[in-house]
Each structure stands twice: as structure tokens, then as C-alpha cells.
Image (cartoon, chains in turn green, blue):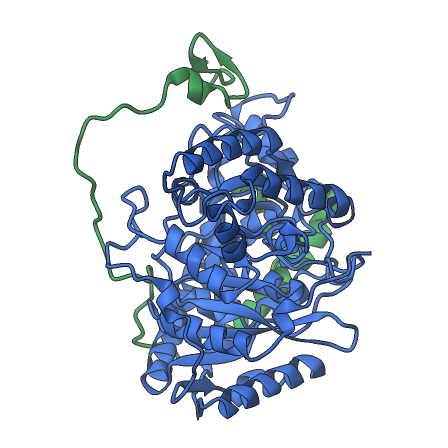
Amino acid sequence: MSVSKEDVKHIANLARLEISEKELDKYTEDLSNIVDYATTLSNIDVSGVDPTNHILDIKNVFRKDEVKNSYDREEILKNAPDKQAGCISVPKVVE
Amino acid sequence: MNLYSLSLSDIAKKIKLKEVLIKEVLDSVYARIDEVEPKVDAYITLTKEYAYKRAQELQEKLDNGENIGVLGGVPIAIKDNICTKDIKTTCASRMLENFIPPYDATVIKKLEENGAIIIGKTNMDEFAMGSSTETSYFKKTKNPWDLEKVPGGSSGGSAACVASDMAFAALGSDTGGSIRQPASYCSVIGLKPTYGLVSRYGLVAFASSLDQIGPFTKTVEDAAIMLNVITGHDNMDTTSLDIDYEDYTKALVNSVDKIRIGIDKNFTKDGVAEDVKNAYNNSLELLQKLGANIVEVDLSYAKYSLATYYIIATAEASSNLGRYDGIRYGHRAKEFSDLIDLYKKSRTEGFGDEVKRRIMLGTYVLSSGYYDAYYKRAQQVRTLIINEFKKAFDNCDVILIPTAPNTAFKFGAKAENPLEMYLEDIYTVPVNIAGLPGISIPAGFDKDAMPIGLQIIANAFDEQKMLQVAYTFEQNTDFHSKKPEIK
């Protein structure tokens, strides 16, 4: 297995996901298979090849810095799962 | 002749000539939906009330002698990852089960400015991750040609609803083949435009360097009409190009005389179903007979596209889906101990298996110690693939390959092994990796009467050539006019 159970636990934590012990085996196997398949890329000589970060030859696209109306607060808050007094509420983060 | 079975251009003409009322067109389509939707399950949401209100407004305009646009009064379906103001947009995920966008995607604005009526939102693989529409949180869409088989994916609902005459056209999104592959499985036209041609503002992001929006239609002409409407510069998407956009209907010329068609025999040698190979060879023969020249091109690097794709796409997805944290919108877990626990529980409950798998794979290839070996290397291979296509297009006008190595498979057939499912995209992902346009058109049926698609790929911004070859093929075959008996 190219990806270990420890790896899966570690990346699940980084990705803020919970994986049960039962799921752990399956994810470890699946991820190993896919990573093994991706390893075929190591057969290719890429020395001196620039990586493509972006397909289009455009950069630094800016809009004019104009003041415009955005959305109403009420409109945006409609989708918030928990709100209070015009704000989105979250659990206490500072003790 | 039922109204619902007409093409987009025919129904638009009938409306304009006042041979039919827009309300009658809607009645016909919704009656068709009542009849076959219980079997096909292509839609997540129907927008009947809204559609009839729009129909009335458009009819009044038309009766007053106003121009209602090239899509005036035509019912169109939208993949459920494209934001529609005040209409639920779920991405077929529990995470966005109750999400109602406060704005319209740019493509939705453009459709409506041109008179289209949105009749519903279509089913898909969750967050567009899948090749069969089986990963939807809500339902499994069936292939209209065989209800025990998948419609392909991820835009399976859009493909199935056009194939079964439940809409005159639909929008989908294509990150690795999600328009072309289901189009092939369902025998409709599916077009993925050049990267940068269509604004993605309002498209829920999956892999931003690959995603494009495109149409599903019943004819190539309709695809050109839809493309005219949805393309154009938009300053809400920084990848949207500020160029002169052409009239794509001008490409609808019934001739492939002296057109150079590139093929790579090695690329289609292994892993392709016999019937698919035969249909492909017959298509080449026909185009040759119609005056096209076949030239050999070298696509040796293209076979590495799939591995490249699953690194780049998952890396981008892991970043894009970081926004679903249960705070501002989307699913929030009911019980949690602290903020981190809120993130974890909301994401764990909100996302399905395949989405989690891809987020984790993306997190893995970007994580410390693996970045150079996987992500950077994939981006370097991406450069090689782009250069290879550039070289190929020095010697040819379009490249022909099958859309998918197989025809539609049964539910569950590939669900256990994710890699096997990914291999269905082997012929579609190179196009996304290189940012090129591609179209899938009906090109035959296998021994079980399941549709086979032919893929035509053109150089970046050369949609015209692609459409010309597709149109010529369509005018000289009748695969596109066959309809499924839904039973």
C-alpha cells in the first residue's frame, strides 16, 4: 500500500473530515490504488519542463475600483445555518 | 407530432411565427415530464410556477411585436451546480440541500436575456464528481435507452432529459468529460467549449483550471445557437476572455472537403469495446468518403492525461471545497463540541463518499513531502500534453477519437472500484487538460442498442471547424434522429 492508514488519518484531519475505523480500510485501499496509478507519471522525463499553472496566457486581471452596491445583508443571511442580530453565529472561539 | 419532440431551432421558429403559444410549448414539455420523469429521474427541482409566469411575460412581449430573443419561449434545463437566483441549487449534495442562491450565474442571465425559460434543475454526480450520476445524494438518473443503465456523468440529468425530450436543451459542466461522456451514453449532442470562452461566474467550482460550462442539444445547429448565447466576456470571471466572439451558426456548412482529420491509432488500440471501435472506424470512413483527409498525429502523452487529471482536479477540488465549513451557508451539524468539531462534523455529514475520497486525494498530493512528486510533476506533464496537441494541430484541423471506451453500464457495475470508473474518462480528459473544445455526437449503437458517441476535438478557439465536421457528419447520418423508447 503506497498510502498508509496513518496517512489517511493525517490527511482526513487536514481536510477536516472524520473517518470511522470501518471506512479507514476502504479509503486506504482506494487512495493507494489511485496514487499507484498516478505514479505512472514518474515514467516521464520532465526535466526542464515548466509546469502549467494556468492554461491561458493572461495574468493580473483587474476590475475598475468602483463603489457599487452589493447584496442586502438579509438576502445573504438567508442561507446562514445559524444567525443572531444580523450576524452569523459560531461557537465560542476565544476563552 | 408532439411539440416536445422538436428541436430547439424548430420550436423557436414556431413560437416566433405564432404557430404555437409559449404556454402550449410549456404544457407539452411538462406533460412529457409527467409521463417519463417517474422512470428517468433526470430532475432534482422543477420550476413550474416560475416557468409559466415567464411564459406569460414573453408571450405578451411577442404579441406586442417585441423581439423576445433567439431562445424566445424555449424551455431549457440547467445542471444543479449552476446558480439560479431564488431557485434551489444543490450540487446534488446534502451539503447544499437547502441552498438558494441570491444571484444568477452569468450563463443564466444570458439565457434569460435571450428569452429562454428555465424549467428545472437537473441531477448530477455530487459536486460533479463522478461518471455515472450515481453519487448524487438525491436520486439515480436512468439512461432513457435502458432504465437499468447509468446515463453517464457527471451531467447525467442534463443528458437524460434532452435525450428523453423533457427539455429542448440543457446546460452542463465539463471538468473531465462531464458533458461529452453522458452525451455519448444518451445519444445527444454535448459540447465543451474552449477554456475561457464561457463565464463560470455562478458555476459551483470543482477544478477551476479545467471547468467549463456547455450545452446539451438534439442537433448540432442547436448547439451552435446555444454557444452563441452563452459565450462572451464577463468581468465577473477573470478567466473569461475579452476577444471577438464569432457567430457559430456560420460554421454549419455541409462539407468536410479537404478538412484534415488527425487520428492516433495507438491511442485507440486497447481497452476500447469492439462495437465502439467499429463505430469509430465507420465514422472515419464516412468522413473520408465525404472528402476529408486522414492524417496520423502523435498523442503519446495524452494517455497520461488521466493520471495528470486525477492529481490536478483533486488538488483544486480539495482547495475549492474548503469553503464548505458549515458557517456561512450549507449544511451545519446539529451537535458539536467546538469550532473544529463543527467543521469536521458538518463536512463529514454533508459530503458523500466520492467527494470525500477526492478531497483527501487532493489534500494528499498537495501535502508536505508529496507536492513535487505528484502535483508539480502533473503540471509538468500537463505542459507536455498541451505541446503535443499544439504540434498535432499544425498538421490537422480536428482530431477524432471515441468519446468513451464503452457504452453505458449497469448501475453499480463500477461503483466498487473508483479507478475503473475513472477510466471511462480516458478520452475526454485530455481535452480539459489542454483547454481545448470538444463535442460528442451520436455515431452509432452497440449490439445491445446502446448509443455510441464520436468525439471531435479542435484547436483552442476553433469551435467553427469542430462544428463544421460535426454538422456534416450529422447531415450524412441518421443516428441523431433515433429516439429511445422509454420503458
